[in-house]
Length: 631
Image 1 (cartoon, rainbow, N blue to C red):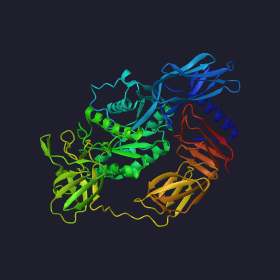
Image 2 (cartoon, rainbow, N blue to C red):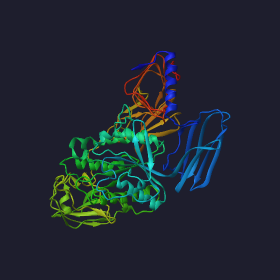
Image 3 (cartoon, helix red, strand yellow):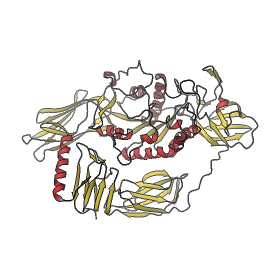
Image 4 (cartoon, helix red, strand yellow):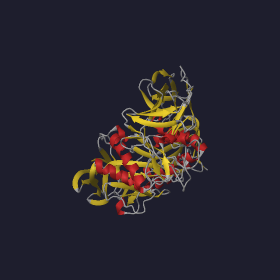
């Protein structure tokens, strides 16, 4: 433990960290670079179809007059700017480039001497892929070779301890992401004419709790989440990233207790991703296939995945059930390519405004009811459903009626037919039927047999989402109604977070809003439950909070005012979003400081940097003994 108790120690400590900061920059003798694009890098385009090339650094010698940035677009001059060094040796360039199939060359000159260059820089879209081994998948690709498309790129992280990596054109090297990710990139690039960048951060066999952030150190390089953040940080992508693909559930879907805890773990992950990638606008969540491990709650997990698009506003979903080449866990190359094609159509519609039919989506059950003695499964409006004929595979006859369960029984349905977005089922004489499930919890024995049966589909061949225990007649399980009056309480904890609690329940979704003036409110988040932590606060500010029942604007809480004065003691476990933290007495911290997030601490008595504290090379961190500046 390091304890800062004097001004003398403070200056020594700051000097040491400043030297580390300079040591972490890219140094070319006369010039040090803090930010500079990499060869082959894809920069995320913005809403104006552009991206900014950011160059930041310092000239280390005094006998130079200017620095100059030159950008070539397909080897033709595109941008040029000079900065005089008369007033400062520090420099910063921000130059916009246009999205599209263009190669940009970035050249930096000191006076008239070229000091650094990045080639084949592109402006397009970057996709972060997270999950476990099936996340776009590398299984069954022994004879695969990446498409020779110069505008699909992937990022390879070589070193997480001293963060290093590079962007590659996959067909020029053996460092490439999974085949499914490359096929997805190629589908998107070929059709929509934008460069595509892939960052893969999946971890084979990892349950969702293992994919969650270390709450004490999100950048923990021993965790998949930490590695993902480090890879994004190397590219200065955390605030630019817009699209995340998540494919997961094989591990948790194999064990009963893990399946039941999956929704809570997913919510933690979703909230963490929103904190660390604040500008992500689309989170693509793929429903897991039927597994072979006997687990009575696997259908529950799949049903939760189906419903995430209704529970979380950034989520879009797709079913992988019925993908070709399934062996009960993984897929053949043809299966991963199929998923890439099907997902590319959804991305094309939602990101590139491609005029696609609604049939590109997996049909989702909307309600179940009886009509003229038949049991009706009604799917999304506009779907054109198909009820499958019996088929023979693996020496077995597969019939759809055997895999639709009424109150847990699969001998109730006798036959079925499709009409528009509805499936009409002829059923045996049943009394007081309550719930319907579609597809078994599990099937087969790993390595021996697996579900290779029939599926409900639409006319594009998209298989319907598996669903579990959907109530007949549109009835839903007993829901605790939201309170008529929401009583909101607030407190500030030692992490300088505002904790909000209210008399809510887990079946109701609430919208949390915050204001700086008690007039103009903005949304902080949405959550089912009765507790929310605002981590985006800053000392010295006054905030006003209120809570609404989602879609019921008149059902709102009282407004609570929170004045964030300096605390006596701060126990900092998570890297804050603000740059300054002060305390009247002491600060204890174990956070990991990154080169993209400066942090300054002041306390009157002591600052304890406990085991687990880390400051990356290149990071900007200071600690000072003195009074809190925001009292």
